[in-house]
Length: 533
Picture 1 (cartoon, rainbow, N blue to C red):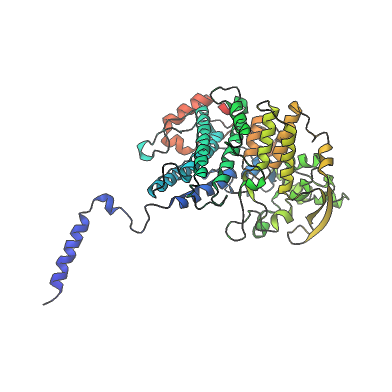
Picture 2 (picture 1 turned 30 degrees about the horizontal axis):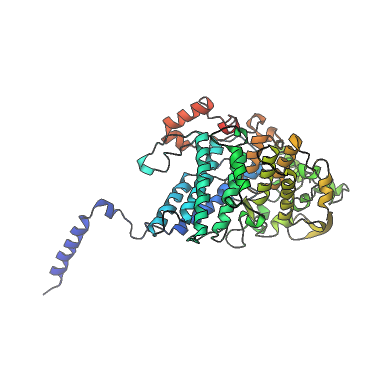
């Protein structure tokens, strides 16, 4: 008897049975996972912190696709360096739309869900840091555009047109999240209850994360300096509470506590390295806002971050003379800048420090030097008592240490031939006491002292912390950013980005209402958001 007459009916039954499965089962892909460990999702979220912390938005960004680490579009907007070759990038501030971080925030929600699925208690390392991530990413978004959906956001198909929250409501919630994160971390650390895994920053140390949370909180409060009298925010009392109770609110105590991205020579190379020297080394030069401030203060960081301008050296200026270092105005016409750069008028990025290695320096997202300046600023503003000068000096010294600058003889390296392999070495004698004795540097208190604090904080932000230098300049006017034909936007520094096109297309009514209530109906990059009023 043939097996054929038995096989065919069996196959028919199996086929019929498979057709009777519900649609939601049929659409499932057996080769695609439906869940992931919380640690794996966490790893993706903290990696997004690096992109946001370096000026990107983990979505579309204005101005450049180079949105990771130092020497990116954010650092041009901070006027630390300038592009002199418009085929690849410009120094133009004619911003349009920006990306937002809702995809990352959805992953934060997923991370928390997976932690619960794994049997962790309601308060766990992932839920505690989830509050911090909400604060971090929502602040990044609101500082870019203004009011955004928050309370009704992240609900997926349950609410595809979420209402907008005001920027003030968002900041009230940010501060509440940070307080909640700190309280939860305190509880977990006390119980030695740590299930965190996949941490690229602190090696799963909740104590280090707690310091970062509270250090970040002080940044947020300083960002709210124009709202110091708002009783719903209580900026001054909140700042004093953190500073006055280090046991409850531990903060970073040295640069060893920095939340920073460390590069390696294989998978995450520093984005200026031997591999891309030929692609951009001569297309970028130092910006006058940054380099000019360094040289005017006779600051030894000059010799680490920049090359002497070849035209100056050819004319007889010593390579270790501050007069040999020249930055270009970010507002200069790009054709003029390109011509001047080709003729050696401007200083380029230091070849030894940045291009001769794949690792260069870590990229600080939230750091100790900034904390010291934030405390100095708060004391200067009268929010808390203390010695502003001590914190001011600590900030400068920590920034110098970041570049390896010490008192005494320092060896500096300048390219011998314009490349990144052959260097001339020089000895530069450094004295912090002599540097600090300069009238432009020595803390003077009052409004002059505040400008000094803000200037030194700007210098310490160089190639770190994303757009923090821009946001501080936007808030305070320090330093003066240079404008001209090269910066576009009618020679104005914009105050914000436009909302994403997706908001205009898919959340039209709420987006229109938000623009009307904030900016008179015009999604204008030069309009002033609540934070700045």
